[in-house]
Length: 421
Image (cartoon, rainbow, N blue to C red; front, side, top):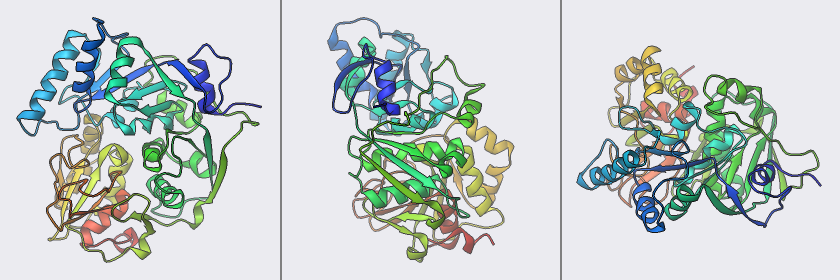
């Protein structure tokens, strides 16, 4: 019996020839990631361990992106603690405000997340890098500390669920719609501690940006990781980015899956996840005319250049509804710069959109987009839990950049084709 992709990656980072689901292993890690929220706790735990240096200053990545630019004194002091640690440890890949981006947009852009690697991050959406063929997963701050000290962590090898997406996408349907549809089908615990392996014609045809959106939200289905096999499109993306040599893995033809789930994407229309769970999905045709107060386009899920291009296509020659605040958050400074070069920022500003420096602020209800009691937002972010973006009596609806932009124009949730004909 062969091995799945995640089993191969884990085995390659141990002294085992093969591993099986449920097995507990100690594995070497390639990258350890932290941000301004999770790293301070990790630093305090690291200092308790009794080692003086991180295992490899090239392999620890720190991105202060959640409450930065700092929103208050508390967040400024958190960021200072992280900054001091990065300087003391001479961390090569510490990204300061002005150079940083939203971490899960930044690492692929910088070529720091590569196929076949084990990447752990003290942030649940670390699973984004599965789109590059890596076993990437979120861990707690104490595990981050242990990994920084030793370069290793223990894992329970996850079973794999294979998802096969056949057919061709309809207009305005994207990777965001595929993953929302999937979560709506299996539920927020439908892949609990499972590796989600995305495959099929529709996945092969997705851009790297679309693939990263899908892998990013594997955690919203309870997944341990969301993997897509490295192919020519992946290699082309990495050609001028990769900072290290890498080894790509793919599942064996006789690999054993816990289950296989198949979808015909030609039957899927743009999706909207209603409050207060990502599994509460409906096609946009059944979600129309829900009045909104705010639209957010960006985040580690949909803040990449393709997302901004789609939003600009919808917003061009239109204007945000007078009762709506529309916010755009490019994922990195490079994405921001590219959007300026392509004239996307002009389109946004002419449409009445507020454009921000890269930050996670609005996604987690941190800053720059907080909702008041009773307000509704349509957002390209990844979670819509109670109080996620502000007041516990506010509501968040999850959707793609196209649906969010169209809804910002209309003042209520709507299909992009109602705006762009």
